Image (cartoon, rainbow, N blue to C red; front, side):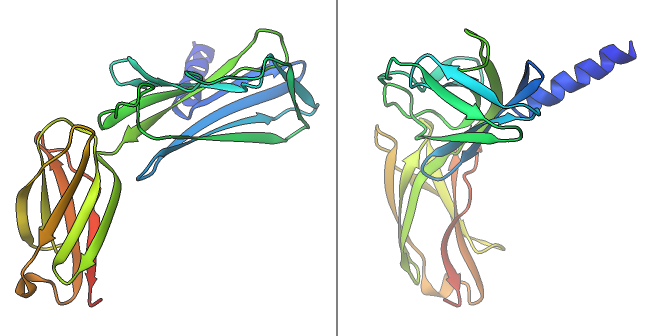
Length: 238
């Protein structure tokens, strides 16, 4: 019973941290995937490591070394790395010495394969290493990624007059609120979003309402209450 509990605990830990391992003749390959959201794209890093004491040679059937699949919370796939890509159909090799690693990095622009924006929310990223020591054998790793409510954000302006542009990952009504960290200065102002998700707003604040010592912060909010990350408009004194 104790062994069963320990085995189950290890399995849960491996899944939670996006890691998979496979033994290859005394060598241990470890495969990790991480996904970091940025304001314009998600950075997905995949690392294969040889944790064993012997060198390992990975053989790939083409120039495609890995596959990436991104699925929405309900399980529907929204993006696959290999779609609309061509790969050289020739054997490729990757040699890893003992305790050596190799990392690949991909950038995902928060869009489906057809170019449509994905809604904000949590997604599952599954990475598959397509080359291993044994023919036809693959290993995978998973992690989660949260797509922000607003991406591609940019701000210009000063002393109460600002222009804010970005892309909204929602089809629901959107508004914005401006505060100084203590009090609301503008409350729930409507945002007009184009069909492609882009928007541009002009924010005007009376000079007497500007903080003398503080930071002017803007938040976008979806109809259901979901908030964006804070957008810094200006710090005072400038």
